[in-house]
Image (cartoon, rainbow, N blue to C red):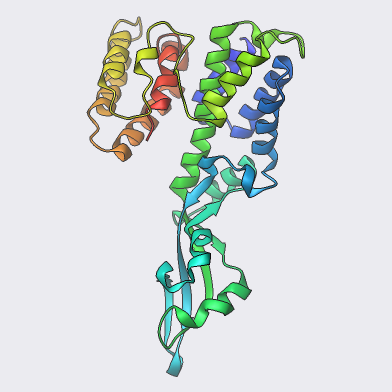
Length: 298
């Protein structure tokens, strides 16, 4: 299997650790001779050094909770903290959590979680500064940001999707790029730069430009029935087992009929999980659609 196809398989198969996928990408970055792709991979593998460098999928919206004590041994446990009680200059920093950790640390956080959330403690000095102004007559003893584990899972899934989009587009430019000699520039650097900025560092544009059939579907919206109908026709025409085709088309129909972004994402995740189990069967049929599908994610 070529390196590009190996990376595609690892991106689709959620049982493959993200660190393994990114190390494969690091080999590809050396062969492409592209510094910005390599830097992004290093940041994801090792963690980001500055919050200013974080991509938007690592900046998560959160709320905060705390423990409070009052007179006569009264207390509040796990109480929500309204940001209107916090001075305005601090509210922005408490609205978001900046995930600077490596993907390995984030995956570990997800696997060890048993409550559906993770916590980021507030600075104790800041707790002391604002603690008496949140609930009348009570003092905040401890406070923390509450990060939904689902948001971390979504951030990790975004990395997989961006890798998949990038590699599919590189393959469209040169199917043998993964086997090229190091720094041989099998794809012109200007083109690699454009693909990187489109599929990894920036917003998705010209989705599936390497394919002649799907550029008209390049919308960053989960409402794109034409694309999903094309995918349904492609699946129905495949040589796969009839029951597998029926299962695949059923999930795609659920995506097409979703009325809310959350519902679309749920069915999209189900479809990608299904593909991971039947990759050899459906990959040739589905691969050209994957960048456009990812672009539809709300």
